[in-house]
Length: 227
Image (tube, rainbow, N blue to C red; front, side, top):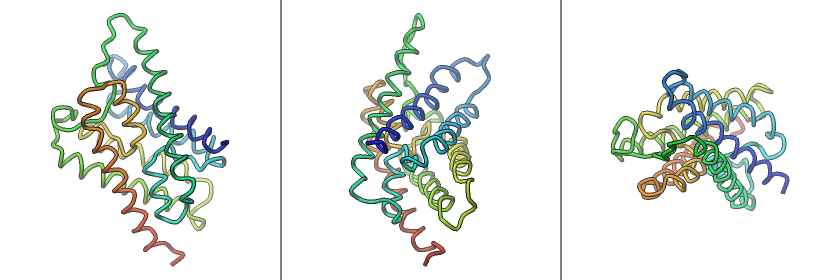
């Protein structure tokens, strides 16, 4: 339960910090954070939680990460579903807090609520195929970074920075395409509140990150220095 509580809190913070920067700050041009600011915010949530709860739960914060670590031989299968449940619930809690804050402004309209989408709901109008490829590849690279930086032979103490910076770079690349998921818990939490089209398109933001994570787990097992 300590591990699951840590994953709940960590995923709550990821959604509140990352999506909160998009909903509360990026919506106002005078604040000047834009896409780059949102990307940095997501990276910072991971860096801060990596050092806060990494020694408790491993700081997955993401069902795709848990799946990729399991495929890569770093995580026990019996813990997989409980971790995913804790992450999804934590994400929903973070989105709920964000909604309560955002709706406190007169004239609030929920709009997309930082949800992930493709086609007309992609920030740059990218197609479903483009979104699918982007999410698979970005998640693949994210898991390669995670598996590599946390390997026993990797430099000690820098994994949190590598993973957080990796997530920042991923957002800089893919916010225009899908608003960046690479995390089914993050996508689910926002889709529940945005509703409608976000729920209809949510399947892609489970399928693609999990597929990318599975591929990364298999590839890293092959290239691992243990082999």
